Picture 1 (tube, one colour):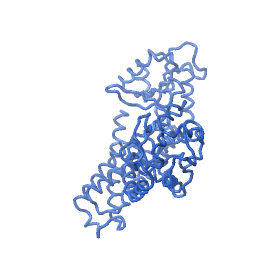
Picture 2 (picture 1 turned 90 degrees about the horizontal axis):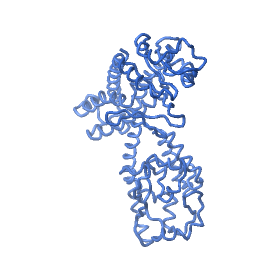
Picture 3 (picture 1 turned 90 degrees about the vertical axis):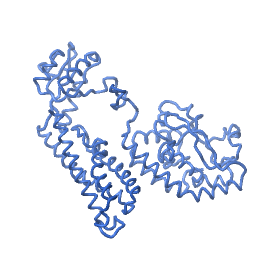
Picture 4 (picture 1 turned 60 degrees about the horizontal axis):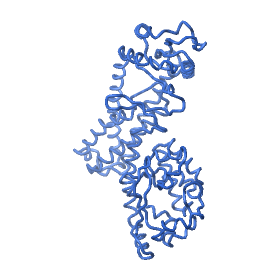
Length: 469
């Protein structure tokens, strides 16, 4: 019943968003500064109508894919707004592609304005409803009955968590535990039931959710608990700290026909990662186009001032240690690698990284290219083909990776980038431990918005040659 009711609510929301997205699209077209044609009537031609239908029908699908319609009473407002932002960001990229393919006569800023308008309209409607529902639940209405599996310390913590969040609207109908003498004293005896009573409890007590917060000794009983709940149609929520507090939160997935719980240090939203990749492709293409004259001039300077190739390819480690060849404009003499052992005692960086501020292997032209980060412009190609990203931890060389200890290797869990927190925080002036800490902080707190902020902070770093050598 609850599941069918939930599906109806989703259909209503999708229909509403379909109307809203169409209305916003037409309203923006009506604004003269956002179109490149005389009148709205002239603009409403075949291609525009086609893209308009794409917006009207496609935008709710993006919202659904981002999980916007999966309203959870335990979801914070930040989670809802993040899903809205990601969905509308992806929508802007999709619309930009469609507008370019159909040669729509709209202003270049139209996709951005469309996404911002969509986000604003959706947030204005959803945020008040979000807080209204929470207010109603705090007053004891719109509640859900929860049956807890277990009556020990984990069950007590689960109950205290629910009591600390009255806005969730959760009420405990009882506890199921076959243990002897290890019940938490604060759990009333008349609310503790045996596992054999579970079928009758699910049928007689109007249970909306079963929360598994049992001790490890009850793991063997979970199969029968889940099977009984599935038979009756009651959802089961498993507190995954059952396997230890040291594990990170898992992500639910599939292994053919079987469900999985995937444990990873950080789970990033797939939709946001798709948006990040889209920005990488667009940014790299634009970067290569804009830097082409600079690259041509730099290539000529390298060719006529020192013998050897223009480009230098170095093996670097990408995601999870996968190796790739990273291109740079050559800034050193051709036998620079062979000279490295003779200079190792001059290393000015701690840890496995080798850096010399006044490296004698660097050519005069190379010193200029390094100062203004021109030597790294070819890496836009690595971003375009997917070896790198615009923003991410800088790719290390294999000899550095083999010296990583503990959590240092976790910096390889994300695609390496042209710029990162380390580069906008001092670059070569930052010591190795702080460098690693900044990279892990980026991975743990990553968002598309954070990438934009780092890119903006990178501009003055390059223009004023801060921390480069």
